[in-house]
Amino acid sequence: MGSKRRSLAAKPNKEPKLSRTDAPAGLSPLDWQRGLRRQFGREQAFGLENLGSEPFFSEFRVSNPVSKSSYRVAIRGRGPGGNFCSCPDYATSELGTCKHIEFTIGRLEKKRGAKTAFARGYQPAFSELYLRNDGKRRLHFRAGTDCPAELREAAAGLFDLEQDGLLPEERFGELERFMAVASKSGHEFRAYDDALDFVAGRRDADRRAALLGQVFPSGAADPKLLAVLKAPLYPYQAEGALFAVKAGRALIGDDMGLGKTIQAIAATEILARHFGVSKVLVVCPTSLKYQWQSEIMRFTGRHDENAVRVINGGRAQRQKDYALTDFCKITNYEKLKPDLDLIAAWAPDLVIVDEAQRVKNWNTIAARALKRVDSPYAIVLTGTPLENKLEELISIVQFVDQHRLGPTWKLLHEHQVKDEAGRVTGYTGLEKIGQTLAPVMVRRRKSEVLRQLPSRTDQNLLVPMTEMQSLHHQENADAVAKIVQRWRKTRFLSDKDQRRLTCALQNMRMSCNSTYLLDQESDHGVKADELAALFEDLFADSEAKAVVFSQWTRTHDIIIRRLDKLGLGYVSFHGGIPSDKRPALVERFRDDPGCRVFLSTDAGSTGLNLQHASTLVNMDLPWNPAILEQRIARIHRMG
Image (cartoon, rainbow, N blue to C red; front, top):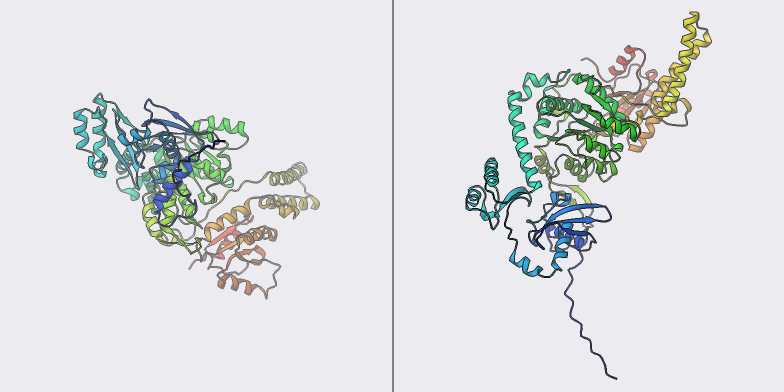
């Protein structure tokens, strides 16, 4: 029997598998991140379609059969920097590559002639203006083989050909003239979408700054700016509004109580009057939608039918609402994803995002949907831009300007402090982040603008009732209506009817806080949740304390549940507390740093002095205005 001999060719050494969480020793963060995308891209089963006529250096469509998404990829070589992909990762990572580019290169390398083609390099007949993002976004020019002499000469006078045709920052103003020369040359000249968007953004910013200088020559102190709304702006608020307009897309991160809403409304009016903004979308928590509607109408005087519309109801109703030509539409975070198509069709000019910190996890459905809402202008409002993790700030800023902070991997590498086990223990160099954000973010502390503020600031928050609250409220309102109707007929009320009337009116007021005040079982109502959210902002200041008034101790009960969940210390002060125990509660609130909230009823508040608190919240308003002033006097006293 003869034997068969089989020889096996040695397989090439495979690249070592890279960890997605820990950088290998001896590999820079940049090379690690590029390696991860190369590794991940080569493993994918994407679809690939050549959109051009060239086999290698062409434009391709890369499609993902799982997510049903597709991106345009341009291949100009093997190395990072010269290629392009329309995906978000390529736009922001500063790596010059992404999984779609690496997948495409991997597939092309398996084709016959690839080695020769990549060795020869990219030599198109046409010329290109393209954008590179190597730590900073910059324009480059690449001359084609058929580029005429006059265009080459014009390019040599503008671009730095020794640095891959880089456009120097100081020569940006001359680009428009060069592009006019290119368009008249008869030569094929390609300017890619990302490059054109970059150019348009720079031009818009320059024009906006020039026009603002003409309209408000005295800047934030200009009388025309201070009078842009029906209510006067404080100087720092005028500065904030002007800053937001000048930036185009901005983050207002002032302390709670400094009037972020009115600054956003003032900026909106400036954009509407001088920059053609006619469609504004406000995204806010559900409970604040009617508050926004009220304040826009109050401060701008826009009361006509198509001025300010709250988006409510089922899909069919929302579809009708988005089809209407309103100046402003107000929606909530939860409705963003299902309404993305309606929002895109309406095409807002300006998007205002209120209470951005409410979406703490920016990987949630609502947060991802928000990032897909497109508009030329954006204003994001949050009293706490950085709460717990740096990633929260990164995501908020990415909606404002996806390139401002650079890639997340780079920022975390530079600013995270880790222990030996790789756990994050803190952050370093945050002042550098502040400097980077200065062109798009304004943040003022109360201490900085104290002299501009009035001695006392009052704010009314409108909170809608839930369906169950409305049912209780309506039942008691019907009872009141019957008694009043009987009184109108007879001009007499029996003692029994008087008691019923008082009880029904009381029940109507109690139902506005929560159904718990009526049945002590259910808890339908959002006032306590809004209060909890307000506390998260307020207590970002480690020394802040608040007094909360309600006529009923049952309101204290539902608030206490939220305080326990937040881990906030409190005291409950009411008429049932023996007089000899009361001083100790006041002392604890005054002296204990962990005791942040003083819950009180009118019955227990006589003679209290709680001036060390900075905020007073009335969960319900008393019938008598004098009692309201007495409550406020607990923390605000003349002299």
